Length: 168
Image (cartoon, rainbow, N blue to C red):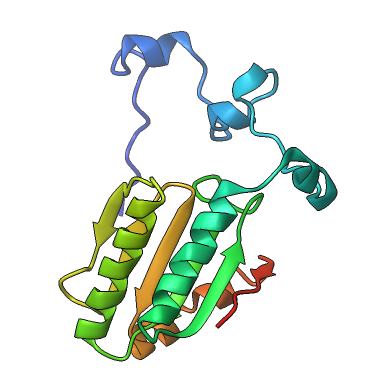
């Protein structure tokens, strides 16, 4: 098979002709040197975070876990993913044995966090019951059926995340 000839400079766009081709992909703006205040910073050590005062994200995560436990969710786990991901502080993972139970858990979580003043940013999978994801921005709740939880293995994916103890 014959190799295609390289495109000449005449066929490239004006912007492409002005700038030399980059051999490495550009870094996202938050990681570029000199990005200023928008640059992501490492999370403060636990002692410094404790000195800053109570963590409202943690309170929401624990409330989600307790709502799941009230509806008989199994294997409830709270992962502290601060510093490991930029889109959430905590993941709450739990198992529901049936679609009606998953729906009841999701509804109870929404009621409990609504009473706390938290705003739900989105929900996915509520009608299927296989994996219900409820996003509160800083805390994301995952209600799995047993097969989906084993398949996706979020605890294994986030093995470096510290676990938060929940009474239940």
